[in-house]
Each structure stands twice: as structure tokens, then as C-alpha cells.
Length: 230
Image (cartoon, rainbow, N blue to C red; front, side):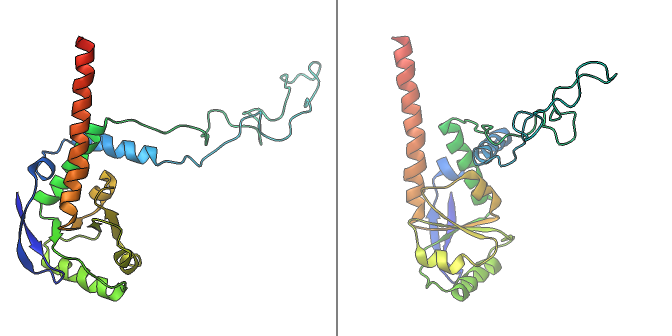
């Protein structure tokens, strides 16, 4: 697959060949949903916390004697049926929300999301991205791409090969704009972005990082299969 390469003025200066193993993968909805659900669950902190009857203060005294009152027997005023009592089956902060997904499936879901951006024209490759750490200059460049690209969208993601302090400082006050490194992509950031702007230097890093993971996983599975047969 070939797509256009732009300069910082959003002018076409050439073309670049994209790897079909990354940017031409047919999407599967259930795999994308599984990858997103896994990432969001693993990032969940679980701050909601309720106290059980053992943790609520008070209730040490028996509210009334066991017999002779005509009322139901009670040993504490901190049971779940009492006002100010503990909570049964409420949310607990120690709950483990972690989910697991195979590394190969996770990488494939990332490729699907990148493929969607590439095939719909929402993956923009910039030849050289040099900028001073000034928000005004960044907004000018961002606006140029918004005009040049059809259906640019509200949210955009900038991919750079290495940490670029100038880009971070220039874009951090711009709403709906995020930055990420080419070797630390995640599917949620990619799907949230309406348009991805990636530097040309980032493309080989993406291939080296994520295609290598797929090869490693496939090799490990073959080794395990050989051991089982032996």
C-alpha cells in the first residue's frame, strides 16, 4: 500500500510504501473489542470501596436482650439491614480487574486499528517534523493538516520515533491532541484518534517493534508444540 508523504505545510512531497502486514489487515470486531476491554480493565484502579459489618465502627453493644421483648433477636446494630450498618456485596478496592489476552492477538488488534486509519485516509505521514516549543507554531501546523485532509476529525494523535520535548511542550495545551512514541503504541489511543500524524522515521520503528513481537510469539508456540510431540 502506498500513501502520500507531506511536509509541515501539509503539501504532498512524495509517497511511501506501507507494510501490508501492519496496514492492510482485515478488521475483526470481536478481537478489537477484546483488546480494548482488556486494556481498559487492566488500567482500572477500582477506587470504589464499601465497608462490611466487621469494618463499620460501633455495634459492639447488643441492642436489646435476647428474649422477652417480642422483637427479633439482634446482636449488633451494624448488620446490613440496619441504618449505618455495613454493606453486603458492595464494591471493594482490592478487587482484581486484570484480564489477559495473548500477545499475538493484542498485536493483531493494533494492526487492525492502524489498517483502518490507513485505508480510510486518516494516517498522515510527515517527512520531517521540526518545531520550536511554541504552541502558536504547533497550532498553525495542525490547522494546515486539518484543512488538507478530508474528515480530519476532532481528536488527533502524533507519533514520533523518540521523545521530542519540543513537540510535547508545543502541543500539551492544545485540546484533543495527544502524543505517543512509535514503540509504545496502544489500541485505545489509536482508536480514539480520528487522525494519526506519524513521522516518516517512525514507520521502520513500528515495523521493528511489533512485527518482531509476532515472530517471537510464533516461534515460541512452535517450540512448545515440538516439545509436546517429543
